[in-house]
Image (tube, rainbow, N blue to C red; front, top):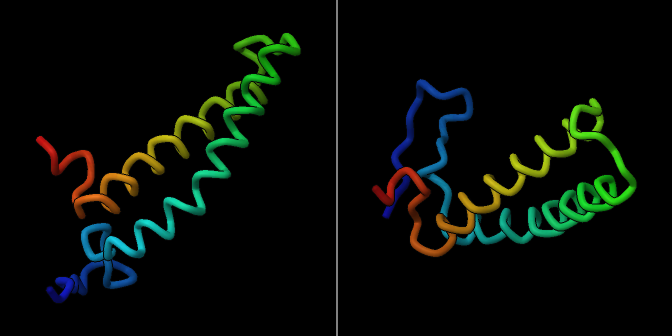
Length: 87
């Protein structure tokens, strides 16, 4: 199946154009990042960083974002569809 090209996008590509193989490769790169951010967040909590600390808030946001991205590409690597396509 040939990906549909959309000339109105900057790169001419959107998420649906990624192959399962490309999604697997991205997922594999994201796993160590997600793991590191999770460990960092836990370590900061154990050290007593307050929830309203600016660095703690950024680590929480980064961890959540990478987790969501990893989940999205994980789904795309499995069946070629993201979370929104599952509805």
